[in-house]
Image (cartoon, rainbow over all chains, first blue to last red; front, side, top):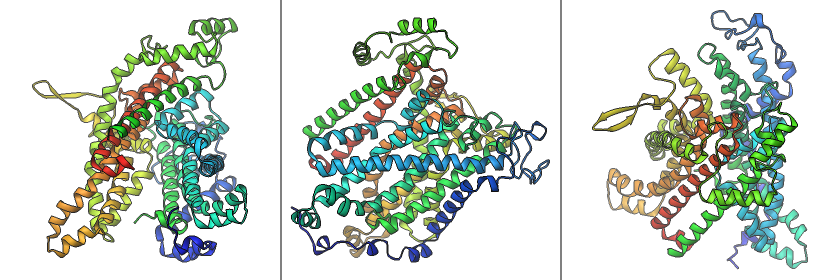
Length: 300
Length: 315
């Protein structure tokens, strides 16, 4: 039994952990920028049909390969120009946000919920169950991630569901590790022992005492993992292994743009910029969330 | 120490066995792997013939045992595309990838560590802001997009650097150095690791600065220069070196994009090609060799770290 301080005995009020987030946000300019960009991205994805000036799939060979509006030969009808098939690049970038956010959101949801359950199990039951689970987790974490993702993606074939499944399932170990570590730590605290003493069952302890303490770290990691998935999805698309080419996604746009790189560079510039901005937004937001929700692991 | 070494070694072997099992069953994720390898318009008869020729008609345990035994002997079958043993193809392409990854690692260390030191030792200043900015951008700009932009700027518009291929220059007496072709791919590949190094070094400096022994050094009147070179740098070096092994693994992964874009004749390029050609014996072999490299790197890093820090051995 480790030494316990008075603080361990007291239930941590939810207020104390999240208190003052608005004040912190106002002081954390970078976090504010990140959050604003992220909200903008979500709104873009939700309202894509109203924002995009053109149908992202509509081809128009007479207006193909147009440069962005501010270059010679460009027009404000196609603000970011058109691709080799005459599709409006701005509209495609707008619609591409849907693929990225869908993959990121559902991927993290899948990985997070499965990782949570497996991690709670490993951390609470311990023993052989824990050993087996952590053996598999460490095996997966020791692999060259991208190589295996490319391997599986090429076998399963191009579809949105497959991409979500690939990222959702391969990302489970990250969440298992956090859930397990936190569960093991909490199991040894006095307030959990006290709860056990009053006759609370395992499930009640996990739901009532362990789970609330996992919210902070999970939300933080979920943000970073979502950002990573969006990044990897674009990378797979770039290799021609993500969603089918008929769906406008940032990765697919880069894959197409690469073939015309030296003559129509604008085909590659804007989807990549969108990926970079999304990554920037989510990283800034993640840093801020970590400050607010998970002060222990704060980066100095 | 010997106990630690042995247990770490056993762990690595277990992981590699796990990798072999994974690689074998991943190919069978969709059921019959024959369908992955024959053309889509193949007739049922042709499929059946291919199934027998590739040995996929035999019972699964037999296939698995044969795969394991051959793999342990370093034999992953022949590449369908090249008609040569997959292993020899990989060994042939390995030096190019190691060269590119090493160049990228060097670049990221030479840029990232000094910037991290500057940022960490002057918190709150312009250098700090710059370092944090570079750290963030390095991790958010996709390397495959940066690579395309570098080509547009340096190869297409300015025409100062080549955008594809791998060449070497002979300096003298048979010593060959990579030619300018390596600059753009290595830089594009390096930015993520550079970002990591800036962040990591900066955090390490900030932590060391607050240690008691630094206060002691200061209070006994050592100059700032001495404190930095004798106390701060040394203590920052250990954690920074420890992440280099892991970073080298990331560089190998990143080479899939970068080698494809720059036509660099390495393993990443080979993998992208093998996936495109549905050349799965080669893909399996590549997945195993990439894992082998990463597992070995982790092992070496851990052992080096255990030598440097006794707490790990007994931890």
